[in-house]
Length: 229
Image (cartoon, rainbow, N blue to C red; front, side, top):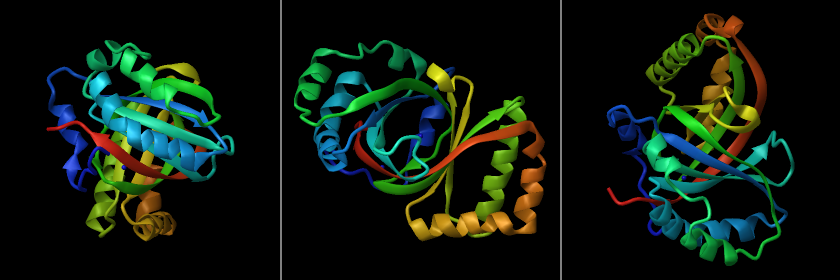
């Protein structure tokens, strides 16, 4: 995998990782529609009611700018503080039914899946992201390599975030999704330019043999609602 009121940048989603023996979850609905503006307007208006009904921590929408698996795809995401919270929800509870009935946009739900959140970051009102789907035979080693890469990027002045998810259902089960992002698109682009530098390539070489890149895409994300803290 950014409003009854917009959250301010710097509110950390990472605090959910402090819950004892709780694994944060992202519920991700991939929707395809030709009316992106209409769908986004509905999601923004309905999100505050939906997160309250579903006990979600936050909700928003991501739209690919390049690399979409299908033209017209959009990603409606919700974050939960634990598997327990996510699983206890009825997908079509009365509030969800009422809000979905207000959606007059033609669309197709292409997938509806859960992703484990294994590396969390701060949420921002809007952000720009470069995502990779990766297969790996050593998740712990790969995560350690990503942690090193993020730390070095930040040490060199790149103000980026790096979220990491692992598919828990559907065709992406076991797939790792890395999401490198920034609030400014130029900041993200500069971090991606760093891939040509020797230090970056050296870090990546430490885990490159244990991964297979499956798909890459760029997207813009907005947070539409966040639960009161």
